[in-house]
Length: 238
Image (cartoon, rainbow, N blue to C red; front, side, top):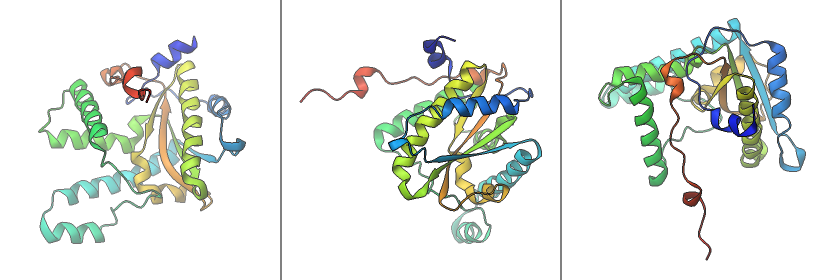
């Protein structure tokens, strides 16, 4: 593709075909991702890749946590607190989950959610349907490949910056080759359940996942949230 076409075509893919992605192609994507700049060329990120039975086992572990969490949310009072503490469903990731956006970011997050659920035909009051859709995150939207992106914890902020550029290269390369991706902060919530499947050094912290595969024709893959304008993101001259 032309570069501009790649930029325009890349979006979050949330439904995949069952076509496999070859190991050679995954290696090519990662090689492209490695061309990203990083602070003093430190390249402070690592990747864990799951396919087949390993991916399915990770999904099973994450789904158990998610299902327990939904069950606890429906409780009230002291029983909710006690069950939350004793269930093992509390987040055990390397970073604290944070969805408490500042007001201007919250507005855009709400608009994005409305657009997504609008495409899906899920009404605002339909909590069961929303929960069922959210559950698909932990099935990796049935993608054949799940990647887990780790940052070096000793320089977490700068490692995250480097990793973001690496991740963008990865997603753009995938788009150029006809693949779809979806970055998933949600899977890092239970990073403690991902770690046992790989030999990961303690100093590396799970910051997000990425599902990878060939996009289906499902309507959800047509959703593209509205982006801010250049004027909106630029500070005026003092």
